[in-house]
Image 1 (cartoon, rainbow, N blue to C red):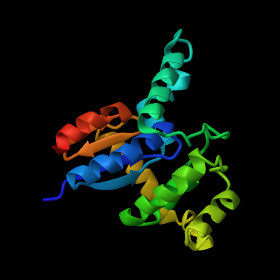
Image 2: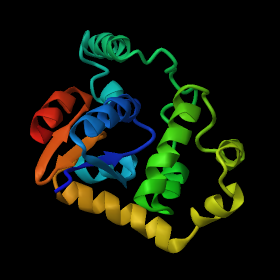
Image 3: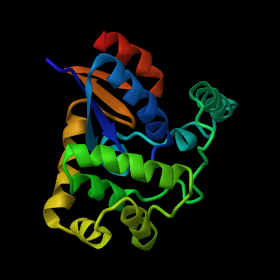
Length: 198
């Protein structure tokens, strides 16, 4: 039986970017599939009372500086030299998240491969359909049709439902992973996910 790693995902999280690529390697190593569940992190924070770490830890002396140190270590370890902080961060990710909800899982994985570099290498404005459209077109998508789907009430509802259900299952931030009933939070848990798959 093929094992599945469910990735609870939102484009706005830099850590989702960092986790995704090593996760692909781990999944390939163990013959596992990745299932992407798009959620709206801002909604998740509202439901759980959580907050972005750079805000939550802002008054704790040295904590954000240490988080940057760990982030830079992770970037160096995994050779993620193209990564750059998006100039719009923290941005409203709702359009990108609805794009993911508008397609099936195989297309979601393809969209991650297309849009993650656009957001976290090239620094496009993730809130602007006119910036997103050319990226989709260059990857062979009908950008107008796909972006139109982000306004479909069923797609909007799917994103809200995904967010609610993820919180009900215990998720409070991004990236969260599920392997069966086991939940893992954060890019630092990739080693534990590998152990679980093994």
